[in-house]
Image 1 (cartoon, rainbow over the protein chains, first blue to last red):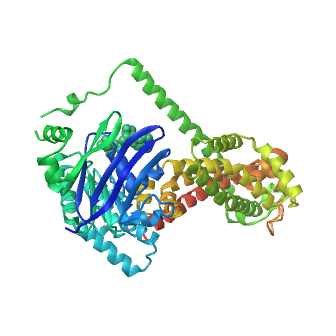
Image 2 (image 1 turned 180 degrees about the vertical axis):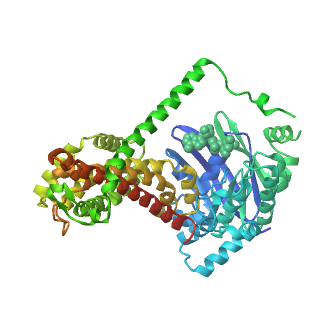
Image 3 (image 1 turned 60 degrees about the vertical axis):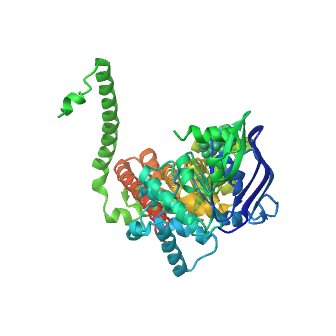
Length: 257
Length: 291
Ligand SMILES: Nc1ncnc2c1ncn2[C@@H]1O[C@H](COP(=O)(O)OP(=O)(O)OP(=O)(O)O)[C@@H](O)[C@H]1O
Ligand SMILES: [Mg+2]
């Protein structure tokens, strides 16, 4: 795998108003690998992910301190171009959320927004992205039908394709399989494996088994004194086989069952 | 095998339930009955007089005979002016309220409250206002333009509120998805939110069109009741509703033509609403499916 880290998080904290969501997170996310974030509900995993593409800016009252670099760029510098930044760092949500438009338009819209108008190029990119997520054969005859008519798993793959058409450097995924049935979820999981190497992937999951199967690196979030903390992070082998923290050992073992 | 009738016994239930069912049914029947009676009576009396000549000739003998061509033209013109002014303004205001102001902010609440009050203001008040502003102060006189502008003011509150609700009904998911794709605010608004909010806009349009076509008081004071064919927007013009009012209140022996005109008005209302729905759907299909 390529060396170096893509995200460099140092001493980052997030407050919603007076309430602290997570505190003093230090972490580096290796470039081109799969990093899984695990931990119990409510400890700030989604919030953390939202800080990495500054989607947190949409939440009223949210305040971020500390610093994050992505590919060498300071995310929270005042000069950062938000739209360009989010183009480089894609996101997949827990609940599949294609636009209520046609399948084709779902994929073309972001491209057009970023200035790509050429018909041929649009068509090629759309087809390429749909093939990338294994959806092309299923939808090639109904590209102009509403995307909301797709099944849950298909919708999630469409959303993945929608993120991929912009050729991002990193993808943030917030429990991308949790709204899907086991089969559809396995399909998405396989996709994530195939994307390893091409993109820096950061995946939140509640599924320890999934983290084991997917992750090269793992970070464990936990709630301490009402605040989220990153308890431990490191290579998957370390976290699962030889954790340094007692909490990690307990969590990993407790769920092994 | 499970017998469906025993698995789900019919809700024979208590007498209270039966009473409630009866009450619901009879009130529904009552509503339908009254509508049928009203429209049926209208068509029964009026439809017979309607023919091509009625639609294309000028009225004669103060409207007792002859046709309604000038009123039809004036109505369409007044409606056109009112919509051309109120739809863009209403859309803009709704976007401002729904997307660019906090729903709890003082400004937002103030504007929303004022709009709700305005929506309930009687049309005569708008008539006086329109007359003072457009006819006199701006010097438009009694004209179709003045009437259309007055009606635009009148329908704006309803249009804005309905459209705003349309925008608010769009799930937050779409905004987040668009933001995560690095889409600009205007791009999101135009390509994602607007198509999704179109049903709200359509509701506002239907309400607005109904109010414009049915208005008499506001127009008596602003576009007047001259029953000649208007030659420009600065001419005075008599709309169908004003014509009906005039025939039934001021002209003895005008009742039959009043009924016929009312039938035309009802049909026009249905046609315009259907057209508005059709345009909204096609526009949406253009946005949603192709391009
Ligand atoms: N927009 C918001 N405004 C205020 N508080 C919020 C907001 N979003 C999240 N929180 C709070 O921040 C804390 C962390 O939430 P977050 O959604 O990040 O947890 P999570 O680890 O993703 O949980 P889950 O595993 O259930 O998805 C929670 O206490 C939550 O109530
Ligand atoms: Mg979450």
